[in-house]
Image (tube, rainbow, N blue to C red; front, side, top):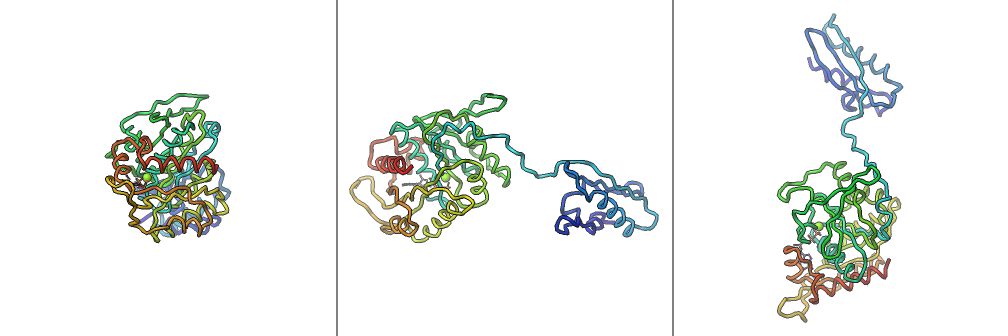
Length: 348
Ligand SMILES: Nc1ncnc2c1ncn2[C@@H]1O[C@H](COP(=O)(O)OP(=O)(O)OP(=O)(O)O)[C@@H](O)[C@H]1O
Ligand SMILES: [Mg+2]
């Protein structure tokens, strides 16, 4: 006798006619020595239909089980399963941050983390106090790009709250979920867990006094982004893209997300990454391998300034892998990030 099948007949009249099994109200259902025992678990908040449901459950069992079967239906009070843990965090910890700026892209792999890390360093070189939170909980890249892999952040207790101390290097304070997981370890987060991990990377950090807190957002424009933007006082964003025509639709998604009336954040500008290719040995040459003027026409199309164009150069890629970002150097590729930093600073 499939007890769950029988219990599926019991619908909760107030909850969209969903049955008690799909609502997760059935804690257990078993048959012991010919007696059927069902335990229904209700959340702490009193359910006015509790008694009705107990009666309806009993009736369904009696109706479907062989005559004379003893039936007992009990209830327990329980917090519903799968409920994401509420982070008891406020914004006080980040209140001494003057500008929180998201670095976003509609699509992955366009160089968002590269831009975020180098922009952070360029801002620090310009004398600003800067932090960067790597909110890409699925593929954190900040530890590798900054050569801080293997570092383990300290924690302090302040007013009863545990705060994480960011890792400092190159004059920037870095925080990433990557510091808490092995590099080889795949980070598999379910939606609510990912959201709370990500919020922790921003809100539970002792940033101290900052002019800029950049947030390297995960690629895409999903639920995680909406939740991040709703719970963290991100002032505005920059959108990173590449010049191809396909990037246009990705940028559109990114722009729509920030301009959505429930979000309504500023977009400071578009950063066109890999705008042209410059060979290492011919620093004066520009090859527009993904097309020319893509960034400018996107900027015009969306009525957003084109903040900077970053060339595709081997050293940017290599310096990302070696943990010494290009913006630290005085090569031409570094100048592109310095130009971006000053464009952003005047935009905010
Ligand atoms: N301007 C550039 N010149 C050369 N290589 C670059 C440039 N920008 C990014 N790259 C390289 O491209 C790769 C992807 O960059 P990055 O990880 O920054 O992208 P992303 O948008 O953050 O990706 P994801 O969506 O996975 O987070 C990296 O190997 C990086 O070194
Ligand atoms: Mg990235």
